[in-house]
Image 1 (cartoon, one colour):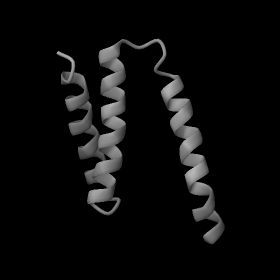
Image 2 (cartoon, rainbow, N blue to C red; image 1 turned 180 degrees about the horizontal axis):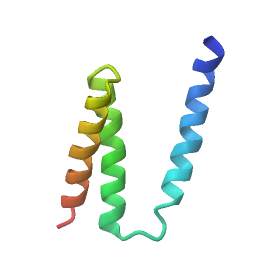
Image 3 (cartoon, rainbow, N blue to C red; image 1 turned 180 degrees about the vertical axis):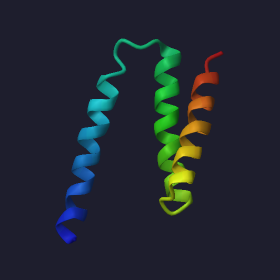
Length: 71
């Protein structure tokens, strides 16, 4: 279990880098939506102790905020 916990930050960084690399062809508003959803998902997971409903709810709220931020 301890080895899994030591690998998680590296795996998260790789997934984050690949995910952000996929945003190169997106519009600014699309990028803001994607980043907002990602940040909201992490925030929702942290605030609710990792529950699926909290993670999904955070992603939805973050995505909406990210979408509306540059209007």
